Image 1: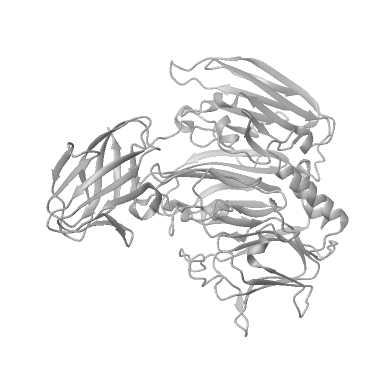
Image 2: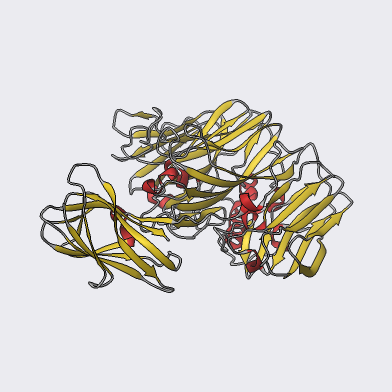
Length: 608
């Protein structure tokens, strides 16, 4: 238990290989390839016992459960059977795995964020483990675990921690609860500091550090962080180990530090922005040399000269090559082909995977963010070992487009949501692996689907896949203006069935996911437009059902006569135009229906 807990505490040990282990996952994903990943519970158990209880986890030999996730916990009991016991070794209410009320499942090692309940408290077992759910409805879940070789010394979990384990857990909670951490919190060794302060002009490349002895980067800090905001995304960070031809890191600064679509977002335990400083505490060992550069790409004639400071801390501790990898971050931007998943990382070699940053931009407005229905999938050394239940689930969240779900920029120390916008059809997330890092001896294939089934939603993904290995597994492409610049769609959609952006007055109402207005009646749909950029927009209804409708936008003085189809197919119909001011809270669409009912499932704005 002590060793497992220390992986959550000792940031400096992230490069260390966990030898003789295999990581697997049991989850409720649809084995038939559909999207029933927990909605009906068809795949939410391994088998049903005679008393109707459900076996949801079973593993033999030596191992440790490293992560439990669900968006649907209940007040039913979970029974843990360890080491072949006939009676439960430990029982707990499912909700209390995450509530923080029952020790040792304490916040923030266990808790809830952006619609998902999670626990990273390690649960080791010396000779097998079985978990039984004693309830009627088990829905979405994932249990990730590590199996060890038989010569590994493993002591079975007890909720009554030893004094040593409790002390480690207290330290984890204290560090993870800090608003801001310092380099010394992550590496207790002797830190050497390299500082830079100067001005950069478009087209400049500056060297922040050029270390020519063995060692390891302990932290990186860049300020002011707001310099890297904006749609241009025109600053890059490039890191090279040991004069390798392929940079270990070559990515836009804003992407590497977890900005979201032009603004500061992520504030995780390992990387993010705090107090207007972009920081990284990911340990980065190297054998002979390390070179860190900052590039200000030229993009047009109106880029300003900027003042920047950097602080890089490193130690002279040599990399132990047989036990540790070097850090690599693979950046890419791509629109995956229809029918094919998006691949985070595909390569051959030895190492372990420790982090994913993902930004998703829908390219087809009629499907809002349905690309996030896609499951993650991981093949390690040729064996399919992990399969998830949805994209926000992969980031320990749940329920995109729903209140109290995956809708806000919130995060825990190791995971969270970078952004979510229905009108812009975009979102992003981050996840880091410390306890649960994914080892591979020969190869890794790590991917995620786009869409509920068949990878059929049009989307553009940007990602950073972080891993440790002796050498780079893949060769990335250098960021360029056309690939790094942030896309802003000119069509922004609002969906009646997705609640918070629309409200109804008069006879307008929500019925079975559509907005409706009875024949010969009046109603108002108020649209929250605070996310829209100022400008002039054309407004369209996607609807059906009447031959004459009178529409007023914001006031009765702006109205249109329009024809809408009377068949069963919904169509796009122009209803007028409006100016969005800054700031503006809402646009009100006043509707007077004709002799037939009006039904529509989308209102969308097209910027002129």
